[in-house]
Image 1 (spheres, rainbow, N blue to C red):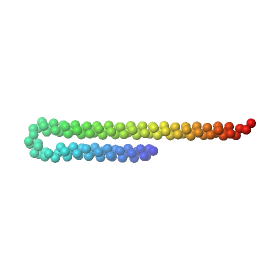
Image 2: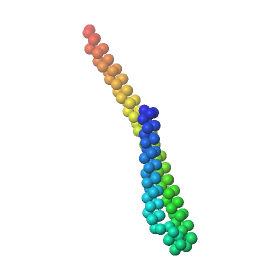
Image 3: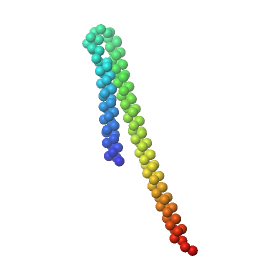
Image 4: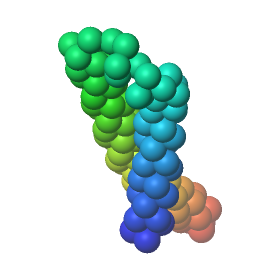
Amino acid sequence: MDRDSYTEDSLSSMVLENVKNKLIDAFRASSGDHGEDAGASARPLSISRSYQANEELRRAQIDGAITWLRSELLEMRSQDLQLAQTLLGLNSEIQRLRRESYGAVEEVGDYHP
């Protein structure tokens, strides 16, 4: 199960990293296609800095969202493993009780006064 968890962790990380890169590229494409050279000369320096700060803020928010999502997925995996262990324990206990119950029934059936 450790090997499977490691594989799932690696796959999840790659998928999340791919989503992150796509989101960053999408923000760049939507904001960068306005013509940086023409826009830089037409707008004041403070607006350009504000735009750049907003871009960095968006990236930070995306990174934060991805980090939160990753932690939630890891927590869900941990809960799944705990639930699986609980269910396996309950199944073992049920099997043990059945064996004891069948043993008691056979002993009573073997008794002939």
